[in-house]
Image (cartoon, rainbow, N blue to C red; front, side, top):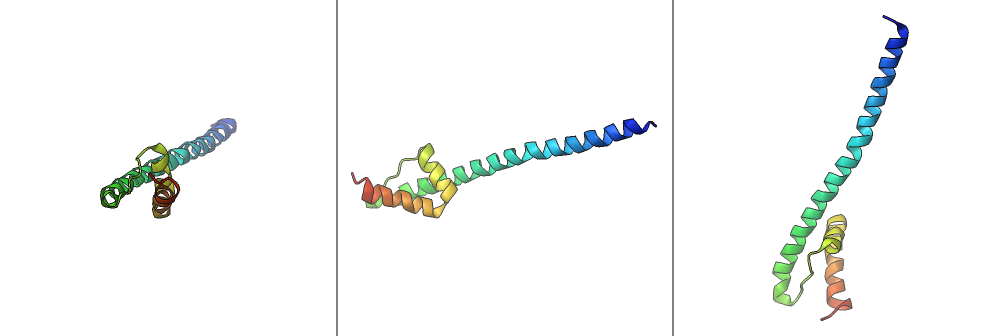
Length: 89
């Protein structure tokens, strides 16, 4: 077999591995972000269910779901503080 063919095959395999890693990382990151946002929406739902007895209601929209999903429990607490003290109704 010609040595040029072997070198081209090795280089193409290395490039294929580099491209596959470059594609899977953003997809994995987006999947984790979607899962966190779903968890944030569920936590906001439960907060609205239990906070309704105390007059606390945080709307479930993209901004609040993003804050609660990315920040977690501290994000939900901050949303509740903002709703209670900064935006009283």
